[in-house]
Length: 555
Image 1: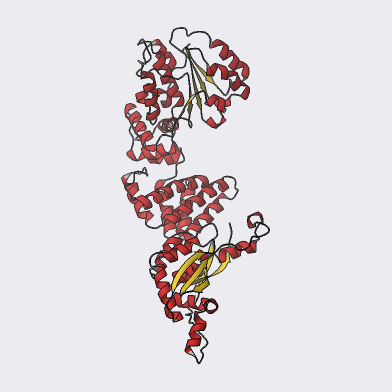
Image 2: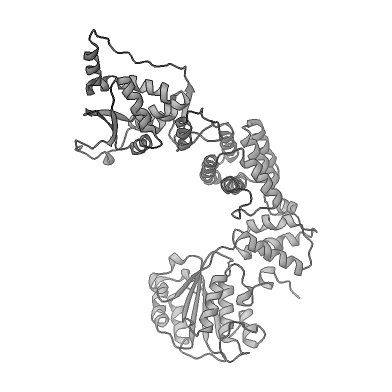
């Protein structure tokens, strides 16, 4: 007897057997129970998630000969059910849309649809890959699809629903099949291995299920390949030798070397992976998956249900996650996603991979902007974290500079009242604003002075000093007004200006309208560089780190 592949041998036979599509199965069961079965359905979803299987189950439920009406539990033993299972029932016609996509073939279908079924209740047309039909073929089907004979049912299946014309979709009940989760696929694989009486190791199932990428059929096909190796018990080593799956321990080791900022260890870990026959693209794909798990573990804890890992893998992920900041992992994942497309079309993929991994390992320690400003506000020295250049795609190289405490120097006069009057005037405040910022840096910290560097003194009337922020500095204004910072600034300025005052923060309004909108004019490299250097957030970070910009690089 010919061998039957697992995907066919263990295809679901009833609604209750379907894995991972419970909402759709329940909806169809309810439609049958209440006699509200539509004349046309559109099943969409990626390959191997159960579209054709669900169509056959629905056909069996409608035409089962063991009962005198449609049932939610077909017997799977009568002539109709068995014929539908193998695709040979005369009243359930399965058509491949890719090879029968011409208008003449659809016209023939329409002409035959008027005839009643030979032995069943309904004549059912299952058209797979329906998006392959031509526009003319779709149009030929429209009238029949809108007002079909009472004995006709249409079930369309497609992996690309966006290519099915809107007039067809509007005449169907559409069901979107979701990708099947790794846990569900692993459970099904485990059940099949037990039925087949094949020995296996537990640590095999999750990696194999993940390789299926949400497709049950792909998972069963991979399992077929593993069984055909003849090795028992089945184990994760077979995944590496026969299916090209990177060794998980070696991937963890590579991530650990990156987290330790060890360039030599990083290159050695890459060599260890590639020497086993793994391609550079596979290494990148695995790193994306593993770093995603670290990002989730770092954000939600090792017990999170958002990651599918064994207990040992969860423990390892928790240890490695401590070496990274969440923002660093986000940056690494986005960079790896760009790298994977470049590597696939490059003749120097090894060099690109190594350069990117070294960039991760040797990248400057960083703090994200919010965390840095928070620490500076509290007067604490910035902590050191891994593993990313400063924010965005524009790395800024900064070097330390010597401390230069600033002091305010005013010209003294013989008449103290005259000096006080001059100092408290708005012009004097404007002239001495940079000196005042220096005092604020010394007394309140560089974070506060960095925020105020985005403001300029506008008015000083009736004891109220108005500071205006630019339209792009709304965040700095809000931060100046929060956490009691305004009172601290107000007290210090009153002391320095020798007069009690109150502060008022405003956003400046545009006084002049430019003749040509700036958005319509392309910015020069110099203009973009100046914008970056003068950005208030960048200024604040540089002051907090006591650093200066030496270069600006744009990706």
